Amino acid sequence: MSVGVHFGSRHITHRELARTRFYSDYCKPCGVDYSIAACFLSDRDHLGILALYRGRRRGDYGARESRWLGDLVPHLARATALAARLQRAELLRSSGERAWDLMASGMLLLGSDGRIMFANRMAEEILRQSDGLAVRHGRLVATAGTAMARLAELLRRASTPGDRPRTAGAMPVMRSGRRPLQLWAMPLPREEARFPALEPAATSCVLLIDPERELVSSTGSLKALYGLTRAEAELVAGLLHGERLEHYADRVGISRNTARSHLRSVFGKTDTSRQAELMRLMAAAPFGLDMDADDRVSTPRGDDAAGKDQAR
Picture (tube, rainbow, N blue to C red):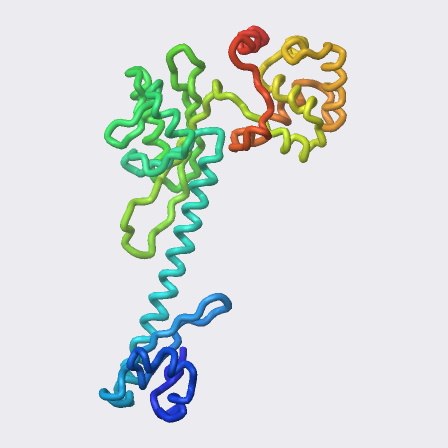
């Protein structure tokens, strides 16, 4: 920090200032004859300067104004540093939320009182259906009375403070005409706030896994990871959806020998030897990520979905 970038006539006389283009273009039209300025921020990308200007009638700045400016600059520097830290924290929080929205499973953060403090996009989609789970008065509840007590106890254990490491609890959540949701409740590490917290911290994390959710695979990702061709990636997507090899070949209009040839090629490129081993490898990929339509692997729909269910 420095005071006195230009301290009136002590640094430059009015006659010298009047000969400059800066004076003719800016100072004179604005009635500025004397200035005093201080720098409170200086780094590679930013420069912050507090400047005061006055006309000739009010006279030059003196030691009193210089002292006032010197007293003010440290506060401006601290305020600017605090604003930068808050901005970085907000950017990290916003980036984290966008990353959580890419997850194929739902994620909730709950406070110690059971209130939902954050829900990613998939969790909001699941809760919006009010099938098995719902939100009442800001809290996660089961829609079936038989599951209410079990869910409440699971969430209570996950949010109860303790010194011992706690294992995650899980339970199925029954739904109408569909496979149950898988609910996992896990405690979050506790951290003591240095200052009085404006908002309570989340104490537990709940993951919601929907086994009925359609997997969408990226051909670009499969090609980049394993060197698969488009046809091979299409085959992998069909197998991930439970199709038998023969049914997949009939659906896309290729011979079964061609489908087997594609599968053998996939085995070689992925260093697998069995279909079950291949499925374990493929299931570990984050296929829930959003992608452009041109980069999506086709999946069975409509009447083809019935064949998929039979293949299961």
